[in-house]
Image (cartoon, rainbow, N blue to C red; front, side):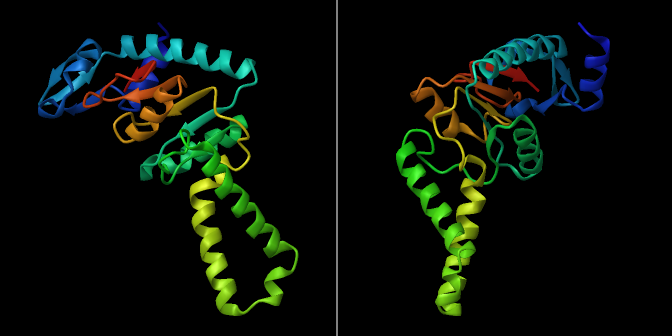
Length: 202
């Protein structure tokens, strides 16, 4: 196990879990111990699972399959967008719309609406309508952009999904599970690792 990696995980506080009274018993295999009412995650397990997850993601990417990054909690939104764009992949970082995977065609219709509004803005159509109508359309564009900009170019279902917080993104996990899309996810001591095929304790 790389000492440098373990040190960087320690410095990032990855080993700190939740309060002992807020735990999920299914996370017991990943817990090293407890200190002042906080569970301590076993970083050896984290590194082993991280390596396994990285190998899987590398395999999915080498097949040319899309990967969907999901992180809607405020502290994850910016980094999820940055890293997904850096990889040339797709992301959801504000709100998971119910049916984003299981009702994919309806979501694609919303994407088409979003694109048509952007085209109207660019081709001069907005110049021919009232300021009130423009304001309404701009509001609609803003809402669609917030929820769909990260998946607008995703033309097919993802080959895998990466989630930042298994507990927060439980609806996304359930949809992926229903469709047989493998999930890589960070699981804290209060999370349910079931449904996460590649859990990373942290």
